[in-house]
Length: 245
Image (tube, rainbow, N blue to C red; front, side):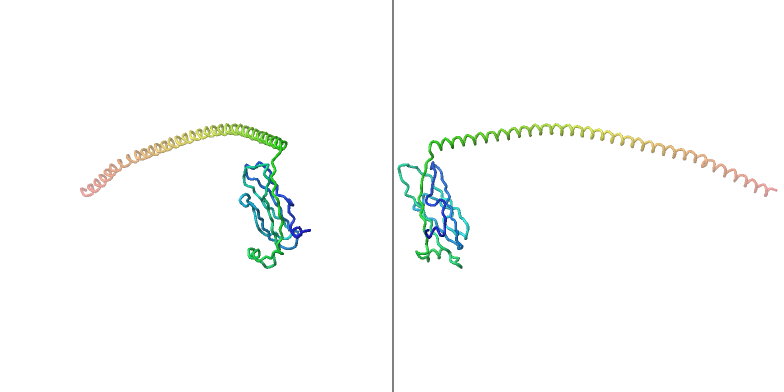
């Protein structure tokens, strides 16, 4: 068992496989596991850094944990007759306790402390059977999406019909409410007219009663001076009679 196998278990163990066509970015994953009871620091290096994008390309693996690294191959023109010479190397080192500056740790590391694992890049083009399977899968996905779209459109149509029915009910309810409001306006107008007529009738009755009172007072006021004249004449006649006798 090598030093690396004592620290890291790589999946895949020896190759990084990329499946074409390579007209777009092709991504494969590299898993690193730390089965030890110590922290492990790692770096991923490649012989063709311009052709690959690695995320993350360095870091720390805690004891008993796994890190997944994405290796993204950039688009290129694939030549099946050309053998790939691209390689990757995973470099690891135990992290001493109390160390926080990892860059300084890498610079000061001794060759015996470093453990390397080399990986070979393999490019694969899909066969005719694979292409047919992918085509059938894409057709099935298209049919499934179309059926989902039809179901969605049917649901939308039913919801629209339900919306139309509810809208009609709402319009009928609005018309009924408008009719009731019109009736209430008419009743209110009638009540106002009744009140106006009653006020006018009361005013007429009060004016008639006042005029009758005034008429009843006028004869009394007119008979009062004549009565006084008669009384005065009697007294004058009485006194004149005494003086004459």
